[in-house]
Amino acid sequence: MSKKRERVSNNKTQPPARKVLKPKSKNQALYIKSMIDNDVTFCSGPAGSGKTALAVGLACQSLLEAKVEKIIITRPVVESGRGLGYLPGTLTEKILPYLIPIIEEMKLYLGADTFNLSKSQNIIEMCPLEYMRGRNFHNSFMILDEAQNATFEQIKMFLTRIGMGSKAVINGDISQTDLNDHAEGGLDDCMTRLEKIDGVAVCKLFGADIVRNKIIADILAAL
Image (cartoon, rainbow, N blue to C red; front, side, top):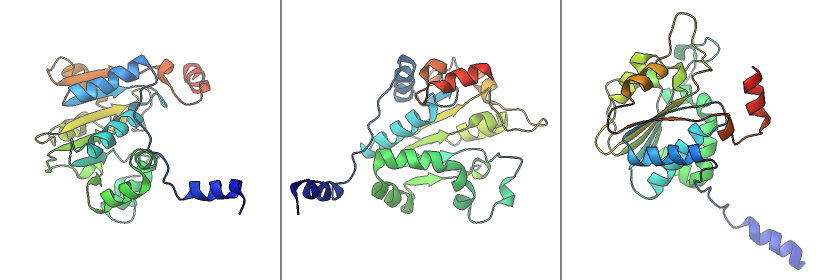
């Protein structure tokens, strides 16, 4: 075997390096600091600005450093007018298609093996927002994603699930909602009402914070 081929073979046996949490803008750095310093953090911003990726990254880092015992991921299941009841399978299976971007991000931070093991042991739990009522989550890092599709009452219910030693992050893009004309999103209202409470942070990300293809910011501005 040639030295070149041997090096390639050896590299295949090494697990890929885990993604490291690192802000790419001043606003992203402030967002991370807010999540660390506060029990509850709201974040609004356009697609690609990092509001979900940074929350997931900090949640995974907190789990690896044993700062929390569990990660809770949820979101309202609102997509193309289909309700939760139309989807087959268990509760986890119902929400799974909506959480693929988050799952992919978590695998980058934790590694696929650690993610799969944590999920099988319920250390990482994916729960539809519609089924969280009555539960409490202690020593957990809780993320409510796509919160622009949650009503005021749903966000209020999510916030009252926060147990001892837990953090909660609620994020969404207020300018993009999939709710029908008869439902009103509660993210903007909750951010306005709670921003002055000690232990609650409200962060905003903008087009300049978009870390995907820069053309996205121009497209969003034009649309």
